Image (cartoon, rainbow, N blue to C red; front, side, top):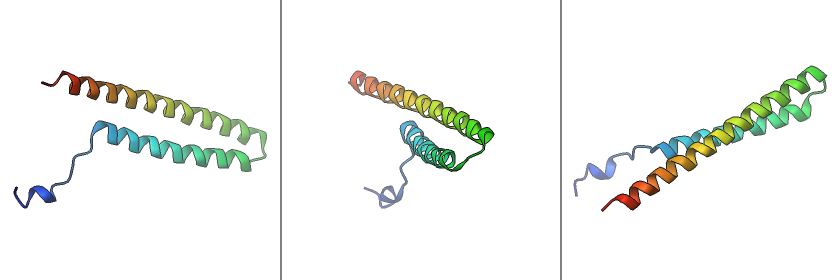
Length: 81
């Protein structure tokens, strides 16, 4: 084994990238909920609700993508000789 192989960085997989995006979305959702709990103006409350709904939809989309990529990877592993 070459000494340089031990220093090579692992390239992030599609799943790794999507999971990192999911983590950022979770943090953004927590921030949006905190903002919602602290506003009193009706217009800001409505805006916060729309923002929370938008983030929740992105979260659902990312979860669906992660499941699809993982299923595809599993299928490739099962098909490999």
